[in-house]
Length: 350
Ligand SMILES: [Zn+2]
Ligand SMILES: [Zn+2]
Image 1 (cartoon, rainbow, N blue to C red):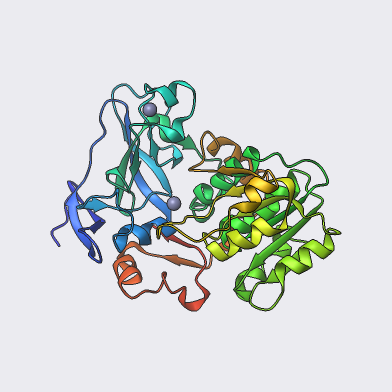
Image 2 (cartoon, rainbow, N blue to C red):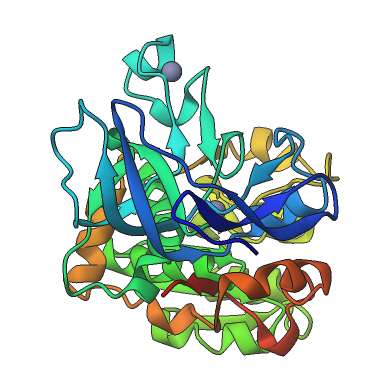
């Protein structure tokens, strides 16, 4: 490859099952944009959905990657709050600021949204990337680049738990012991939950539950989850169920263990189309169902939680990689099939 300071290495998606490392033009910042020299990017399940074509809103060619940050290399003429040399993390959601929802502060529901590395804007699996100044947050020195790659993963659950009505002493079930589910357990405890149940099917992941505040850990392959939780709550059920698995089995199980008038938060991604769900409990028990998309306004709080050591994000990182490894990680199924107990990967740059 012919390397000069006008080009850079980037992972480009050229349509379903086609990703490769390419030498592409280095971007330059527009007026209100910041150019960042990439240091770390978290690998997200959405990357896999783009890779195999399930995520229909992505159009090739596209540089993917959307959970990253780095060091500010250059700023556009109108940038005022970010300076060259700052260590920053970038929120991937791009909003217009002018539509009906944006004007109500519902930026994550912007009618004209784009997403860095996903929809209409090149991403971060590249030596450099650009982002609007309004998406850039400064990183405290005590957050490592590896940890920075988990900020987006934590910001979603931070927004999610705050959207619920969880009160002191209440009971919570979290389905899905992935990074988000584990974070939900810990955050529920930080919000004062009295008892948390963590439900999953992979022992290697469930094993982290205790560290993240799960009082009861259930493996749906072995344990009768509904029976256990109903008995443990004297037949009442729990106050809040968080679905962070994206599985209809989990969703159906969750509907059976919520108390009458209880709450269900859907955080898992159900990307594969309609799923069979018994919706009768919603009507009979007047369940309150909420969804969450993204992490509106939660980056600063999330950065604080990590910086003040209120939650450990490092323990869910199973692998770190270099950008050169990415195309093979997608095409070999390493991530999709969670080889070597893959849980969460962060791509680190020199
Ligand atoms: Zn993501
Ligand atoms: Zn908008």
